[in-house]
Length: 287
Length: 160
Image 1 (tube, rainbow over the protein chains, first blue to last red):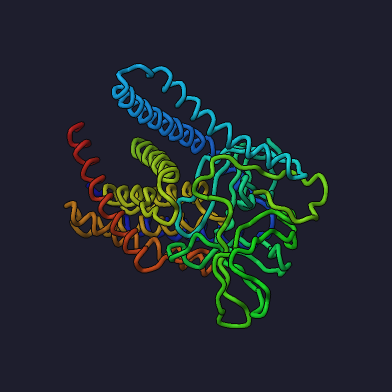
Image 2 (tube, rainbow over the protein chains, first blue to last red):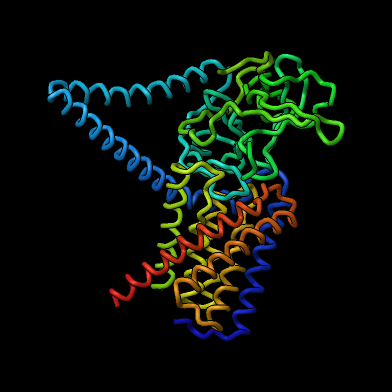
């Protein structure tokens, strides 16, 4: 079964490959801003594969839902002795179309509500590693998407673009531990920073942590949290979520958890901001 | 050539599985790592060099399509895991489903710890895995790996 390889040769190969990887990783860590040529090239080369797979999986899902629907309709029609089979079929088919139309209408509504140049994109891949929370979109540089572009859904902020290829972009969602956004509590104007949690598997790990809020600050459960625009990535006033828990922190700051407005696991279409048409000064809800 | 082709095909299959899982299972509960299974199977059926290259290739694809901001963490981790498993498979008889499942279990733990360690070395913020999550991940991968390897071997024997 196993082929014999000279131990010295394999050790040399191992050392060479490990060194190459360490150099590649160090280069990215030290590189600062910008997308590396390596990342751009690899994303460009591999994203068509994922896009194809995503389309295939989506197609199979649609077919499955279609099959389930037809079966359900068939049983219903049998109870009604076949009188309304065609009517029910049409009704359900329109229901699918209506759901899709509603999603697109929400997206269009958001697009018209925000004074920014945006592009709609489909989510073709979701995070596959427990350490990072990311999405892959089917739009890239060719559609005007740039590094650090904010990404939104009709219900709230999703994250920012951290890698762009010609026809694909990868998004770091707010839940990622490495991601953060400057925010304000809409009611009391208390500033803070939201980010993902230390453990992706802990209870309530789908909540954001609101950091750097002093012990005496006016924050209560139910407060709406919006972007402050302080970090220079997200426009000011976009809804991030709602305060779910306020507790006593270990140091000078309170322990606050925010339930994100965006439903990260159910995202199918998002809006990517290409360029702000005008300053987005007035805080507003996009819900 | 043939080996590289089948490894490439297996990695493409892993992309399909991972993408499908992204649609079906919410992120915190997504424990299966098909890329690791590819690396371990290549190492078990070939040698340490095959395991090393398969691990690196699978890890790079995983990093680019599903990983975080810094590329190469999963690639380096799977490279080392592939090498270690390949080295082990040349010295020990790892032929039964139970033994292979145990190897996948250990490889999953090693891979997770390596990624977290590399992330901390390179100051990349990464969410931690709790012991329960790590154990669940290792167990699921071991079960899936044992079953999958047995199926692939049976298919190969039928073709031979």
